[in-house]
Image (cartoon, rainbow, N blue to C red; front, side):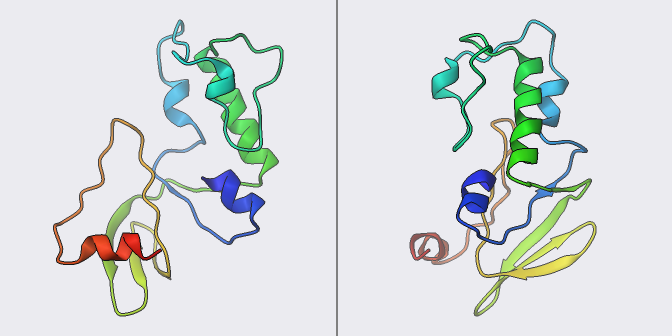
Length: 131
């Protein structure tokens, strides 16, 4: 998502609770590989290097994520934890452990092991459908 936004010259912020891009991939067991082939797993606008094997090992994937962030000048705010997100008439108020900001749009991008805790709210889907 960040690469696509950068490629479109859009302004955006990334809040990242860990201390590095792709942090979790650097924490797994040594023999871990992607279970999908590399040509189906590459991020937008940045194919995997030809020398990478068909099923990319976790250390290469971690390196790839670092290179992707560098290539697209993606600079997350590391060590920042989301506290709350609320909607007023025109903006989304995002509160973290570091600061509070207002945004017109908010994108939640969590890994498959995390879940955004979203309270049920009347007409919440209309916010998403009208983007």
